[in-house]
Image (tube, rainbow over all chains, first blue to last red; front, side, top):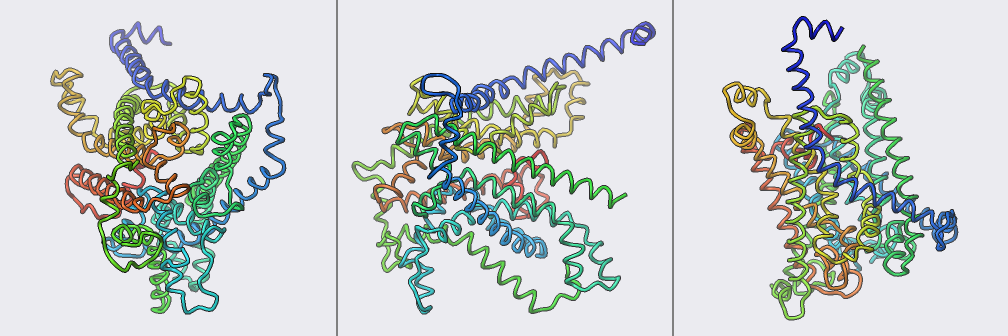
Length: 298
Length: 288
């Protein structure tokens, strides 16, 4: 078939083929910097982490470092990480839902102003924002001064889990607001109006129409802030106590203080696997949501 | 959604809660700005008296801040240059040519944004430690580029997708060479995107903590690591002043990006529009 094509119209077919291959060559040439860069400085280092986590001190293969990472204090650090990440995800999802919902009803100018208040903190170093919380939540900070009349004041809001969750939630919140805002703007309001015209009450519309429509977005926003919290330690290290040590902080300590690279590598791989599991779930939910949308549309 | 028959009380309650949440986001930043001018920088708020002392003490003898600031600036500049080179070439490959394994390249580019930064940092430490490059500004910049270049690629892919390819074809049909097309058509149209990519690469590198923490040495410490150290070990009240300066930098950079986007979009809408502000946060646009 190709032979007959070239026989009948040799020039256009050949030039198109040549063009295609030229475009391919250009593509490969231009993709080379990013591919080489990330293979050398991203993929290779992660594989060397993986190998290191499996290597014994004498060079033989071992699962010893994983056993170490999953017992005793290290295991409790892992559970702390999961717990703080879950609490952070829950609160940033709840606040994010309320805020994104409120913004999606505002007039464009006010919505722009509100989005600015969400977006600007996102680009200010998390260290700086954490420091702001340390000033706010101290014994003589604004929060305790304001709550001075409440019995039991001043409250211990720093160096415990309350402080950590307040801090990490404020760091993760911009992500969830932005994601949920996008989802909420995609909701077809005619569906809500249709439900209302058929006599559904506000609660019913919310529960049976609106919530199912935004549910996939909610699930992936929550999972995403969970994943981002897993590898985070700036705020827990600065605002928490010894009981709020996170896995990323442990990795840092093992490398910097104990020179324990293998153990750190194993912790890193565990963190990586948890992240992959979370990302897989996000993917699953997105594709489920997409197929449901397609089904309801057809 | 339920503007239909929403009660006034419900609307007021929602607005109040939303305002509290917005305060929750803004308050830590406002508090830093105010405290940096306060005579008592140790966590007492609101302040009793005002002073510029913390700003002047940044440059006092023996202060670690100027060195950290200049190292961070140098590293961020290097990283911006690397990211732009990688970003421009990669975005060209992804939008203007045939690329085998395109989705694999995309997955590779997104990788550093999805994987915990601490894992990337550990890997880079294992790469640079044997080369005894710890503490080298070049090593830190190369590390930061792993995080900054994917952002640059995503912004530039969105930019190039937004440029009508027919303009380039038209120029070609009139006899313009590829260099001329790039210089006279594509580059001017892509300039706002390139500026945005440069600014975001710079901010990414300037604020980066984990990789810097792993790759710095005792006498080469980037600004975020220095801030972290002064918050954990030696309590240096001038950290409020440097934090306030960082806030001012970030806001300035975002204003710049918003202006560039606004000018680039033909001034149809205000830089305050939701699309523009949200576009700042998700610079990759649809590519993400």
